[in-house]
Length: 433
Image (cartoon, rainbow, N blue to C red; front, top):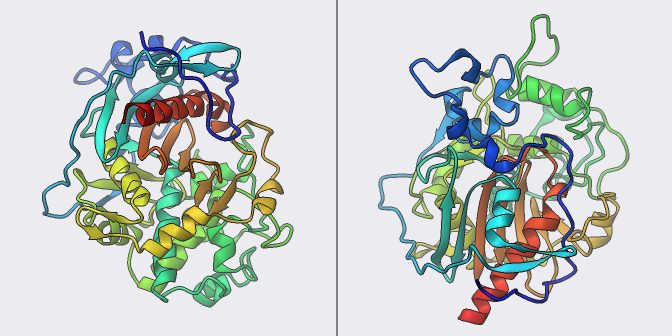
């Protein structure tokens, strides 16, 4: 067994994962062992469907997050005809690496199990040093990355700003007149990009009356029960949102802001998000597999959380960001765009967002849909509910991509456990280099 790694990076320390939600041990929720969707046809008690909502019920999610395309409408993000970019391997034994987690020691493999990890890859100096898949996850199967999607959309927007195609200071309604009488009528594009919008909208997944569920039904991401009324597309829903508070005064994380930003991108480029992603990023990084977006009833991509990618392609994107936008022999993303993201946003405005006092949030900001740590390792990351992460540590020359299917949506339950593990890996790799 390797010796414990002492020390942490920045202000983060570990606490125990919250016990809310399903109490079964992670090992007992393996979707293959439970037999979800196995057989032709599967046994009736092992069928997962969209129309009854079972695809979102844990532990069924341990299967559905890797098989969403089989249950809902999607649009493809083409990887192109080129060969996949190389990811060499320099494997390290990391499973027994030990680190402080609150008042106890935890190993890397224990952290992965306790956070319901489906797959994880660690990249160091461009080489894979660790890669693992479990349950229903496979290296060729795109997995739901949920709000990591936002960081892709924010990056695309920042690229268009850099090109002069999009003016961040302009009002949203300059590009989308349909939103003139909505919450976004007097908001700027930069307000959208940095989540500083005053809009009446709750992102509380535990509240079945929260607007997040109206949004989800409108976009076809949750089933509509018989007799359900209200908007049936993303566009219809966004036009109904009302203002609450003032724009530009403080950080307020709300998925609908990214849906509006995606609408702006489509309008200024006259191109779908799936095509923009393919042409601007996916083909250029030498993606190994096609990706896909969930879409609503008229084919509009779920840009706030509907992107599905394979693990190694996600880490390719992270490595592109770590290398200042350059990857696969080309400058995929302008260096100025990446530099602006790493510079971060206003930490005081972030503090106004009222996030829980969880280790890891202190000193953060949010810029172009990325979480910016401002710590000594200059860590930035992208996050999605149920434990999706893309973690970039430039000082350690490390990128970690992790897909999970935790029973609790909010990542506030996971950061205090995952991040000390990520930091321990960073310190170990730096020590071994």
